[in-house]
Length: 463
Image 1 (tube, helix red, strand yellow):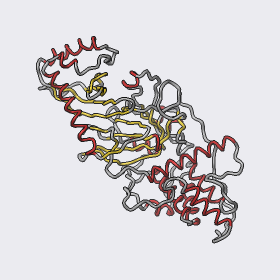
Image 2: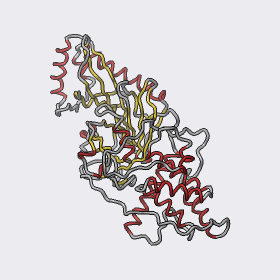
Image 3: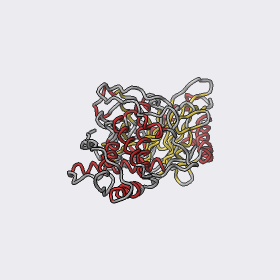
Image 4: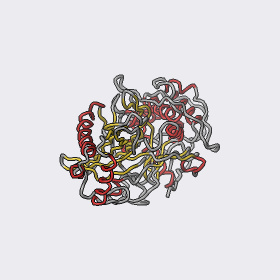
């Protein structure tokens, strides 16, 4: 199901004999137009970040060595990258460092500091030889010394296949620069994260419109953005509907397992984290397909085009390695959205309180053994894990009440994620612990808002 269409190799031409950059004349005017026109045509392409803009959060964990012996070796950063990384906290990973150095090349070019831009582009291409976007930027800077350039990635009469690859690289460049400029406000979180259990250490959100994956750490102060990475989605975009449509699904998912690179083809890079697609909402909507993973890139590619997978989410291998060594399967949520909505943590407090009141009412009805009141919390078209109808589920609920024998329930380690599209769904996970017990079954419920009322359309034990 997972197939790879490789980009043609785009290697920067060998440096020509050194020539002085003209201070005036057609060549310099062309170079300046290239920098200030082609580059700044993108939002904030070459602007220095505002003093008040939040700096990019960097995950502090050091990248581990690739499990693939055949993967290209990464070398130490060249001294030219020191200035580019100066604004970033210590501990930045190789992939993130490569992106920040590329943005620095763009800024230097737009500022007319061509010699510095060329020097840093050469160092970047040397340190990351499979980073095709870096090779393209270097090729342009070299070509601009001898001829006018019409656009970013200005290849003379490229072959049709190379023309497609150039268009993909321009789009990748646009997405990386836009993500640098349009950063979420400091302390903001995706609105979907209504409540995350204290035992859930990390959460992930993917914004397909920005080709970006955001990694959050969950601590005593709540969620904190610790890293964000360029990401690729399906060849035909998002909103997966059926098997083989080459689209990435949208919704609330959970990582189910961890796959080592030794078990996988080179296509998946440093490993993979399968997701629980299709989830209960997907199945209710008749969606089909499987094998949706968060995985790496082939050893020959540093990154893939913004839309390049068969439906998975792909990120650079150094980024995936940090995630593989950070998140926990089964408890880590992954929200994939066409566009994330960012709010302050206080922005979901009211919603969290309101929904917890509903959940508490459900728990109270069950604790008190009131079957009729309890059934009122379920939709008429409810389906359980084994496609149980509401009639069959009534029998299961009756057995649960008899087992409780009037004991109250405590809902522990609760998480609630709010998904909004044509309808509203709350994905709730908790441990249902009877009074006097130390543990209980871990359950997941899918609630649907109908008017001002929340009702359950799926419930099942997951652990």
